[in-house]
Image (cartoon, rainbow, N blue to C red):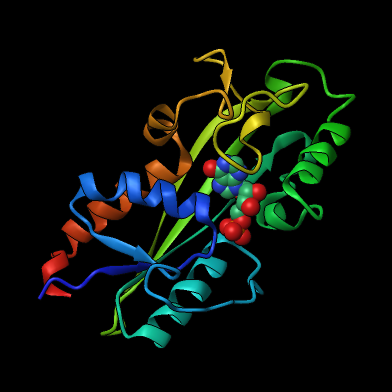
Length: 202
Ligand code: IMP
C-alpha cells in the first residue's frame, strides 16, 4: 500500500516548499488542505521541538496517517534569540513582523553583529507510536531593509552574504537547496532510511 504522508501545517508557503523538496527524497505527501482535513493546533510548547511534536501528534491522532510537521523561525543573535518560537506571532502580519525586527535592529552595526539563523524542526509521528524530530538551520544576516518578492515571512530580511542576496531575492530553487527546511528535510529522509522506514511500509 502506498499511503501518502500528511504534512501537518496550514502554512501554504511551507507546503509549497515541502512539495518541492520531498519528492526527490522519495516521499509523497499531501497537506491537510489537500486531504480535506481541518486541524488547528495551539502551539503551547516552549521549544521548536515541542511545538513540532504537538502538531504532528495531533495530525496523526486525527488522520491515523504518518504525519510530518514543521516548526520553524528566525533566531537573531542581537535580539537574544528573538523572535524564535514566537516568529509567527511577533506582530499581527508578516509585514509588521519584519518592520518590528528592522526597528529593533536599527542600532546594530552591519556585518556579523547582525547574524541570524533560520531554524527548522521537523517532527514525524507514525500510527504505530514511533516518533522523532530532526533539525536544520541556515545562517545569514538581518538586512537594513526588505528586499525581494520571493519566499515568505522573514525572507526579504534574511541576507545570505555568500549570494549577495536576501532569501526574498533568491529563486525558490536556490532557497530550497540551502534553507533550514531543506536541511531538516534531508535529515528527515536520512532518519527514515536509518530506521528502515520506506514510504510503502506505512
Ligand atoms: P510556525 O508556523 O509556528 O512554525 O512559524 C513559523 C514562522 O517563522 C513563519 O510564520 C515565518 O514568520 C517564520 N519562518 C519560518 N520559516 C521561514 C522561511 O523559510 N522564511 C521566512 N520566514 C520563515
